Every structure is written in structure tokens, then in C-alpha cells.
Amino acid sequence: ASFLLLELYRQKCASDQNYGSPRQVGDSIFNSIILLRISWLLVPSIMSNMLNPDAIFSNNEMSLSDIEIYGFDYDYTLVFYSKHLHTLIFNAARDLLINEHRYPAEIRKYDYDPNFAIRGLHYDVHRALLMKIDAFHYIQLGTVYRGLSVVPDEEVIAMYDGSHVPLEQMSDFYGKVKPQTQFMDIFSLPEMTLLSCVNEYFLKNNIDYEPVHLYKDVKDSIRDVHIKGIMYRAIEADIEKYICYAEQTRAVLAKLADHGKKMFLITNSPSSFVDKGMKFIVGKDWRDLFDVVIVQADKPNFFNDKRRPFRKVNERGVLLWDKIHKLQKGQIYKQGNLYEFLKLTGWRGSKVLYFGDHIYSDLADLTLKHGWRTGAIIPELRSEIKIMNTEKYIQTMTWLQTLTGLLEHMQVHRDPDSQMILEEWKKERKEMREMNRNFFNAQFGSLFRTDENPTYFLRRLSRFADIYMASLSCLLNYEPDYTFYPRRTPLQHELPGWSDQLCTGTFRIPFLQETVQIK
Image (cartoon, rainbow, N blue to C red; front, side):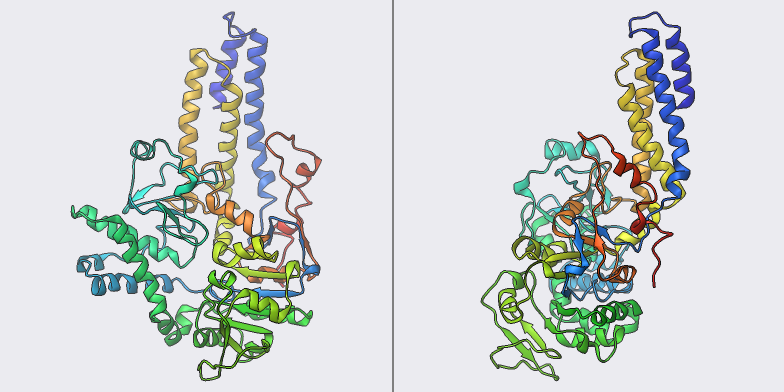
């Protein structure tokens, strides 16, 4: 690129053609050369300001000193699972398809691939297409899959009359089936992979099938793995294989208890399953840390349905018929609803902070209707930040941004030589984008970005979560009166100001790897 620019600069400065004055044209190209040189110098500076994977990131200003009550989901919030769990779910659901839905036994040859899908993808139920959509409802071309094969961009554009998906075709918060449904749950990774594998089998064998029926059958099979207790029994039988033991969960809960914070647990998982898991990761006295424990809550219905009363669960797991007048510490309750919960506890508004991994089922209603503060647990965040901190990624992104700036700066030159160089840069920019996607996931790229725009997943994360982090252990890095400030980034019509310059240096203390230490 430097050589091409220098050669063009030499030619233009000697030119007397009507491209503008030679001085003006030469200055424009010279400025592009300066931009190119600056990009090379930026890499060491960026490398010295790497992000900390164990930091907490803020979408909305929030002070922990205002938080009196902490609430938690269970799965992928208090407890994390090993890679074996998704294989278990995939295999069990695949067998249910064969044994109960009479699908061909040959689909048993497909195994779970943990590197195929990412969370937040959309699925076109009628066309049987898995894809990534950005915050503006545009499909990221190159990420549309039919079965296990990518669909050519030209075919996608022909099917959708472009690459935009109208709002009325998108699924709502609760996953009611529209032409497009979104997979937001970490547990949905095996579901996406199984859908793609069965689609692949039908396509490879030229079997005519109805995509809507396939989607429903796979969804039902995945649901049955949970509802019929297949997953719960397997985990309880070999808890060390499936649950990632970590002392940090207990350390977080103990720290909050030591500072006088009240805590509660609301989960969709059953009582005995939660009890065994919590005893494994926290200890036999885990219930002493919580003021209220609610199981089989049936979120998100728990947040909206006012009709279901709480039921007490005794030590043997038997449901009692007593009317609940108070939620007592040390007891376990089943079902219920948020409105009764608020009435019995008086825990309302912004003094409550609730953590969960499902942006819709755990967080959306709480922030939109009840004014609770919300924290999203995004396990993928840690691995993506580690990738973003690598020198190769930083070099690639710096050069990609430089190419974009050069294209923007040089597009005013309409002569053949300039246009030839611009076409070469566009081709290189496309290649760099594909390389950038492959850093994260070869099929779909980053959970948080398409080529340039935020993903639809990130758009909802930004709306429904005040803060987000890779795991609850990140709380150990912060004092209980810490205030989270979202970084001010310039809008497209704003010039970068002094605060934006500071944000690239020492003032990014909470986010820098070298300054945040796990205690």
C-alpha cells in the first residue's frame, strides 16, 4: 500500500491533468501516506493498553454503594459447566429424535462440534437457514448456513431481496416463533448444531422435508432433555465431570454477606439439582448465604404471570400446601411470581441488582418493567478479549481500520490509476474482514460484532444490562462502593475530545490488564 501510494504521489505531482491542482492531489495522497505510517506506529501503543478479561464493563452508570440486594440465576451464573455438558445434550436430543420422532438412525453419525455455532444467531424457520444479524437487522453475508454449508452471498440476496430482515419477521423477547427466531441461551448451542446436522443429512440425501416440522421436533427434543430430567440426572450422577468447580463463587457470595448485602436465588432448575450443585461449589451451608431461594420459577413467566403462588419445598423435596405469608431464610420455594415476591420482600427498584446469562429471560423484564439493575454474565467475553489482546489481532484490526480510512480519503480521485488502487484496497479489505472473523469463529465470527456494526445480540445486551462480565468472580476485583462509568465514545457527528484521548491511556484503569488483579 505504501509503494502504491508513493508511486501515485510521484505521478500526480508531475501531472497536469484535470484531477485538481497537482499540489492539492499530491497533498491528499501525502496525507494518506502519513495515515498509513501512523497506523504502523499505533500497534505498540495499543499493545501496552490491553483489556483485562476479568474486568466488568458498563453500559449504564451504576454505583455498587446503592445496591442493597443481590439476586442470581443458577445455570451459567452461579455455576459453570464443562464442555462435556453440550455433548450430552446434543447426543440425548439426537437419540430422542430417532427414538421418539422416528428420524433416520443415520443421523447418529453426527457428533457435536463445539466450534460450529455461537450464541445470538438467528434461524429462518421456513428456509432452514442459520445466520448472524447485526444491530440494524442486516444479515452478515458469508455467515448464512444451510445445514453445515455456507450459502453464497448471491443466493442470500436473491432470497431476501437484499440482506435486510424486517422487524416483524424477528422473534420477540420470549422466542415466539416468527419467520426468524434467535438463540440467546448458552444451552441453545447444541440445539443450533443439531438443527444444522439434521438439515445437512436431509440435503445430502435429497430427502424432501418440511423445515418448520424439523425446527419444532429439534426444539421439543432439546426441551425434553431438560424436562424429562435426562440432563439433571446425568449431572447429579457425575457432578465432577460436568460442573466446573471454582472457589470464586463462594468467595463472591461470602464477600457480599460480609458487607451486609441480602441475597436471593431465582432459577428454573429443580430443587435437588440446585442443592447438589451448590453443595459442590459452595458447601453444605450454601442456603445460609441466601435470604430467599426459588426453584422451578419458569422464567420469564415468573416476571409476568401474577396468578401462580409460591409453594414451600421440604427437605425431602415434597411440595407443601401451606399458604405462604413470608419468604423465610433457609427454606426453598417453588414457582411463584415476581409481584408476590416484591410484596413479601419489599425489594424494589434500583437497590436490587440481578445477575443472569439469558438477556431476555433473566434481564429484559426486570429492567424494562421493574427498574432493577441488571448484570449479564457472558462467559464468551473472556476468550474474545484474550483474542483481542493478541498482537496478530491488533495488527490486523489496525490495518483494517487504516484501509477503511484510506478508502474514505482517496475515493474522491476518479482517474484510472486511483480507481485501480481503490479496487485493490477494497479486495484486501474484504480479505482482512474474513481473517478478522476467523479469529473468533470460522463460521460466524465474534459474538459482539459483524464486520463493522454491533451484532443484534450486543444491541440487546446494551439495552437490558447495566453491566456485563465474563463471570461473577469479576466482582472480586471491585470494592462494594465502586461506581461503574460507561466509557464515553464519540457519536458519528462528534469530534474525539480530550476525554476520548484519555480513554486510550492511563485513565482506563478498571479495564487494563496490568492494573486489575484477582484477589
